[in-house]
Image (cartoon, rainbow, N blue to C red; front, side):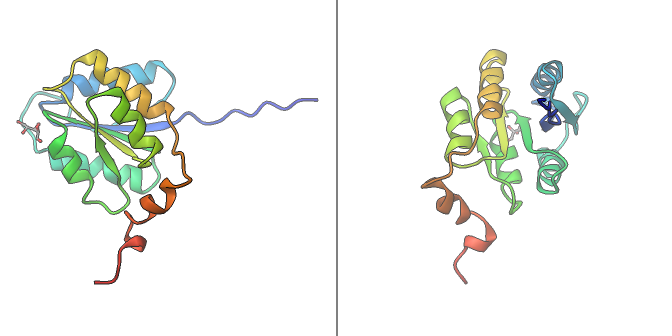
Length: 157
Ligand code: RB5
């Protein structure tokens, strides 16, 4: 007799500032329609907000295990990535092409993807997101390098 195991859907947290909110909403809706567990942590409107506040929310959700992956959208992706990478457990990659998105997972075990809504179109952003979600960490020679990115891998000051 065979047993069927149902895995819980991958949980993904989304955050954006006012420059990224429209693209964030589009990406979140796409993943929701595909059956992922989407946690939309804002922002929700066009009022001007500060991107570090939303990077912090998504970083915290990834770091505490509420979600497995995060997606941050601002105008360029740069501010979001800088803010997210201040959290020790976060490896946030800015990607504006599919190869970067894929390799950020395969080689760097990135757990947050940052996108720039003013730099990429919706279809490119969707392709980046799908590549990011579908790719796993390769491990092997990349594992000790990624370990050095964590606090435990830092040489004593
Ligand atoms: C907001 O105008 C813009 O500075 C922000 O979205 C982002 O691009 C910062 O890195």
